[in-house]
Length: 612
Image 1: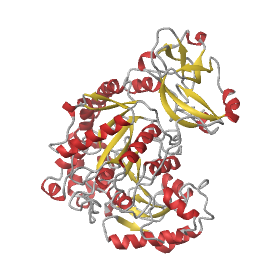
Image 2: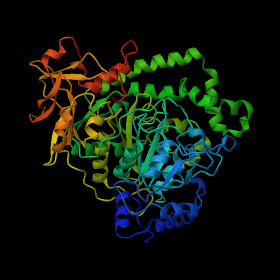
Image 3: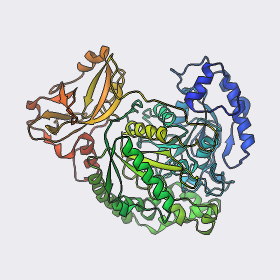
Image 4: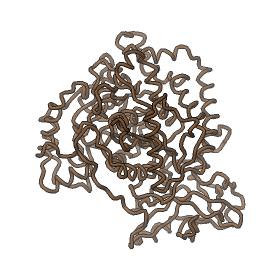
């Protein structure tokens, strides 16, 4: 096979359709491994004959039932794979699992070929990629710069063109920082959409498996395959991920104000970020400056506050019985937990709740945030001189994300003036993974930067239109049928696909209806209301009747006027059905209301998020 065959899904599947054999791809993976000759990328590589046998037994090429057919992938070595040691970059911690992590099993079922397990900052604690007892992997853009972590090997394996995609984990930025440092896509899903069963925790309440790929479409496709509800994971969320399609022609993006942007003196990085904002404007974005101080305060809680105790809980026995087995910098970080009391933990929780309210208020009415993926670059020498400070600064725009329950995607943009990779991260409320991915994909195509450290060019891609096809009907969802929410399956199970975000005209009110589960809102037309957030979905015309039969009174389908003066069919509520309902119009939409609940500990009624 050609030695420069790109491994992105579109290119590799085209080659398979034209007769390429996955056995040859496996051989090419091993050739590239030998050519790159970086012992720091993989900690364990599966025996080649075992992978070749898996390739031979894939069956005929079938990207429909096996959407990841023949794609080589790697996983971070805090994620289990049958018969391979899991070390979390700590040899004394190692164990050999008897089964795959839930997510690894799903990806193999989808046709992907596991190559091996990759290096990391020990126990996934670090953003630099060099806190490991093994050789650190080399940054593919400039080996003088840190590779980024904690998912260092997973990012390098993709950026070097060895595998099509890889899994990392992301608690504080471990799936975004190394992506930015090596010029690839890093997707951090909504917490709970991808199972953590079979994953060594860092902070169990904040952890998520993350995805590295060379294109947004690839990362999103892997996310869709991986986002299957796991009843054995007590932190799992039902919901799934909508199809990737072109977004709205107008969207509002919050960004750090000039006064609160932080680049630690790196003017080149500042210019790169501003160029990216100009690119978003050209795509139809309205840029809204925010005072980012509350977000930075949230970020500080992750390591300066009591959350470090979660990391401590994972290694408490090792700290007591075999402290020399731990990396000295990791040990220095987690031992901070010994200075916190149980009362400090609750003070931290209370402080986070206060800050959630402040940040939610700043995000109200916005479709997403855009931040620099990293504030600046650091070299290996910088970390030799100070192993803590540069690592902390790399988390400036990442550490707050999981604490605030946001989804995110780091996307490469035009390289900086000095040739180092440019990258920004799009963030949004939980469940909006598809919406930010659509914008990220368009921005990536617009910039068309180099693909990691390869010689490949970014494949051209046109996202499906955000408009319904002739055999589809557009339906506006205002509540529990929105992506990631409990009734979304009623659309997706009937072949529905997400089209775009939208807003009503200002003639509507939104009410939280009595009853449930599941809890749901009612959208009512009124003379004095507000603009309410919607999602527009396309449903096959042949399935509309079946869908309508599942809608209970007082809800129904009527005509909704959008803020663009267009009209669309969508969920409306009979006026008689809201006489005893709570008026939640001021929150701007159902998600805005849900976000307010997470910031209001005095709210007594829990929403039911189970699939019914």
